[in-house]
Image (cartoon, rainbow, N blue to C red):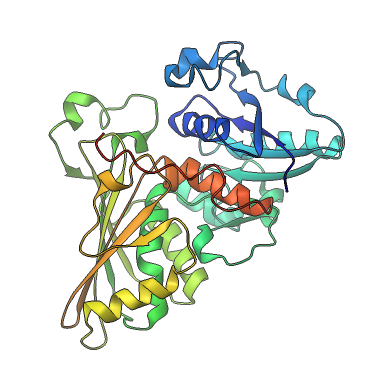
Length: 353
């Protein structure tokens, strides 16, 4: 497909929204026609994201009731949502109603949690709010692209950033049959994972030179990870997940520990990951342990393995805003439109940030 596809970003003023605007602006097939924001409508995009002053020159945020006028009948639409959990579903439903009325072929990738569960009850049990568009749930599929070879779904609910990193680390291990034991996961995330609105946990004096766990064994991403791992492997893993807040802005570092059914070498374990991700352009299996500086600001996830008799360690690193959210969303949208999966995502990590 060589033609240009109009793209719209809902909830465009947050960190994930800003990353979507950055990536779409450099994409060879997507043309940003609207960055939607109720609170900042009519303001220049550069007023919120000065680093996009050149790539989004002259573009302004659009109000939710304004951007549909930009859509042509019988056209196409790549609709991204970076709206908050609990709000995104209703916004997507309204957008799809407009698109359907104009006979527009539309694919949606939602970066919120609103379409990460296949049924309304499971979502509401985890997030404690009513679902904004339960009738749309059957039209969405959730998972990382590396674990779904071919999806016939019309729309995608992108997994959370923690979920993306942990799933990339544990699915090949579970598929290998090397373990039927428990998985112990420690994950550290940067402050951008908490969103743009200031909180005590992201306030710089609290976060700088600090490291602390939060919601150990009860984080809401844990059931999401367990469910998506089971969908990819058929194995119901028992997951013990302890997230941490790190003293950096971007990135996730995940360490998984497990016992295997018998002794296994690092070479044997690595072979499982090499085979699982042989055709995955954004997953790199490395010698030794990966480092976040080698992936931050890119769509790459690096994974390393280590063993000692019947104990295995898998470490994964990725950028929470890119591979864990906006970059993964663009990767999915490429797949939905049958574009090259790497389109617009080829930039390497800057390394020395």
